[in-house]
Length: 270
Image (tube, rainbow, N blue to C red):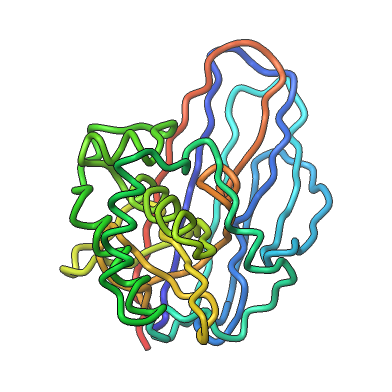
């Protein structure tokens, strides 16, 4: 499948800030599951900083916007050819050992309810892959999709207690129970063309990758209860949503920041 992406992030400030520094994980890597045909990132009135490929295989690019500035636009556009590998991350270059992804973060720490959810699901598994699938299915059943109940700072334990959340919450919960069962797991940010029912997806997306013995890294989208296929574009990864965020940064100055994001992922004519 050939997918086109238009992703615009606009920052507005009540009062002009003295400057902004950002770090971007906005460039998808090429591997057996996806090939980047064209990709462009522009930041209004910015100065390019250093860029590097980190140990997880993700390209990280820095930039700065000198002030005074009251609005910044980050625009991403590109075309990617994708292939369905049943969620297996094949041919991806990285140097970080899988065991590094057994670490908890503030938002992925287990409470008693998460421990029990993961333990019950894992015990029913016949082999490592089946256990991973059962963990993802357990999260999908325990947390229904509802964008009105959680926010960017909601923890996995809080989302499970609420019984609802968004893809970030599904992913954090799956990371929590997988790591508690001794399975390395990481957060993945990217794009989704359409959900399991074929409904177009109008926002950036997130899912988990679990390291399965004999297969390596395998993706699990608990929000849609499936493995990533040709509808997905992988951007970057980390221990949680904050580490894997496509855009991280800081603004120097007072005033409140307002964020507006639009994402359009479409299938191009083959």
